[in-house]
Length: 122
Image (cartoon, rainbow, N blue to C red; front, side, top):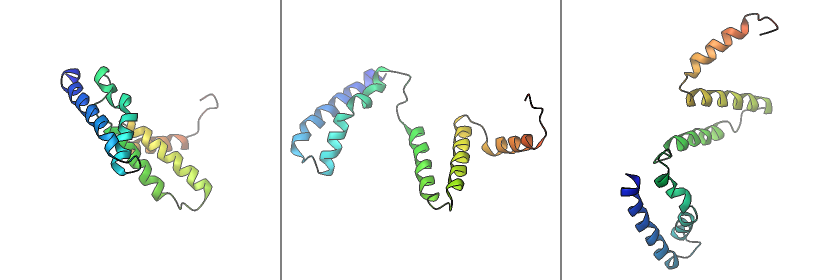
């Protein structure tokens, strides 16, 4: 289906980009966008040949959005050690979410377990 429907649209888009590139200065916003699209063309069209690749990158974009918001929110944590701790918790929560695990339930379970005495071999 991708080769039947997407490949012709992508071929037309590539031809349009090639035709438009000389008409826009390289430093203009449209010139930069056209240049970027042409340079990334192989990666952009890889989904046509490989059915395992998703049609969009919404999951990746959502993960990056969270990281960008976190970077802004955590800019003034007060101390370097606090920032490292926060980064560790952030990574743990992101890993839980990526594996469809409720981070709050996971942390509650782990915190209860680490309080209990454990034999040295465990």
